[in-house]
Length: 253
Image (cartoon, rainbow, N blue to C red; front, side, top):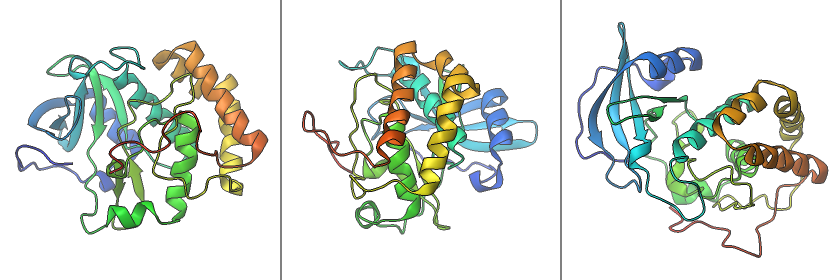
């Protein structure tokens, strides 16, 4: 991701913030717009967020800057991004950076901690690899029904961890999985993934995750999320690409 300007901000690096502190900073801190990410389809603003003596860089996507889509209700993409973070947090895999829904300079929207990706990583090589962190992301995308897992939505860090961003077109009630991460298609899920899915099923049925998603999504979308988790548990396999719609987003990077 690139911004129109390269402001100098005195922030705490994302790696130096635990999720609880980051969420409080994003939710309660003062937002100041520093630039716009011109390659993004929807309005995506690069900001600083400050609370007391703590500050960090973040991304702010106001609802009013969302472009209408034919297959997703208007004004819902920001909430879907927050829902993706909630699922990520429930898995314990730390796939989605800390994300909140809040008011900002251009109205309500999502606010997400900025992640400085390792610029030395070749994304074309990365998306063809079989790294365990990518395999977990493939499972995560199947859970949230991610319709747009491009290579450019991967943020690899120098320590090997990989974040995923841009989950606004997720959680549709109809199956829409489109991703560049098909290298495990039809393969058995790992034991770790099965354990996480078992925990998610309970959390969606009667735990905090189910209650939180019902605040962000429609009931049909929450029920479809539970059904996808059940399907993965019942088959024990990574999903196969659909024959009814494109399985890879365009452009793939």
